[in-house]
Figure 1 (spheres, one colour):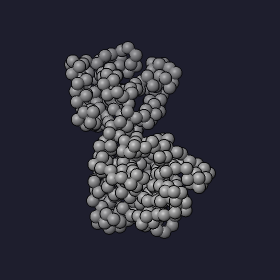
Figure 2: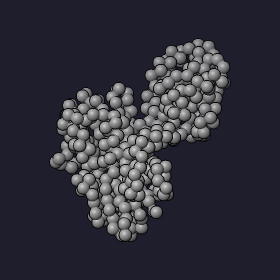
Figure 3: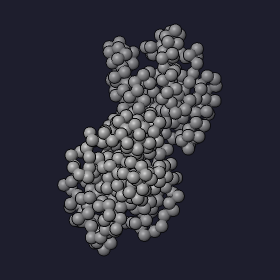
Figure 4: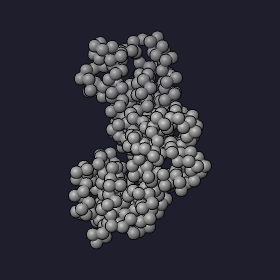
Length: 414
């Protein structure tokens, strides 16, 4: 059985491990250019395919039969080939509806849907089914029934923002479709993007204490429905939670922050080994990127030059998965560093008394105990602000490692 996913840019898709954990077929990732797409559909050399951006509407003319759900929505994400005839449905509807119902009640609410593609049509149908009071459709230069993003800013009554575009998807992780500061009545954010695990839009919601969800649960939910459609077999829908949790855990980074010489690197290496994760030391990555030692960077470019390279490295490290990342002590000084590391990362503060920190050596700013105390006065509040959990490392190393493992188990399911 030849099954897979077609779309234009699929380098970071999670669909293969999801399908292969549910069904007994091999699931292929098949990126197609717009020029390649027509020939692929005409050849029909597949048993079943999922369809993603930008082909959810473009695939319709090739389908011989569409079920009522796909017809109503006007977009297709699942096609199966039966004796040369293509049958189509939309399982995105099932996945998105399941995800939203689990977290939010849209009944009587004003919802803004960002985007005009096939997923936008699905989102409109889902919001309507869930009883939204008003559904505002937002796009660039589309005309009725859409409004522009500029006009959207005037709607201060928007209660839910639902992003159906690819804005914020890896590798363009710095982008956000809207600024939530423009919507004072916002009660929730829904983003269909799932890579990174927490998009820039969701990160802003987190910082503003607005409940949010990103698209991983939708991806798993629609995949379960797609497997049922492809195989004509019933799948246990309780698998959605367990698969989403495992995938989230397997893709998430663990980010360690704290003062210089607090034990981030030593603990991080041991933690990575115990959890079978990769390990990355930010200072080592900075030296690799620059071709210089950290003292040499400070001598040539000063602290400002070093911080610029540090931010570039933070952005690249944030794109990794399943990695323990040991940060430089001053990475917290730039909010952007913490924002991007948090997109795929769970941040743990390794807390150590200043009196126990080392001075001198290869650390240009740790010149004396007095310098460390001054540094701590500035940084301690930042470590607390940006961390999801704290582990103290003031005594026996083995105890700190044990406590670090406990935190990962309690919060990440290891």
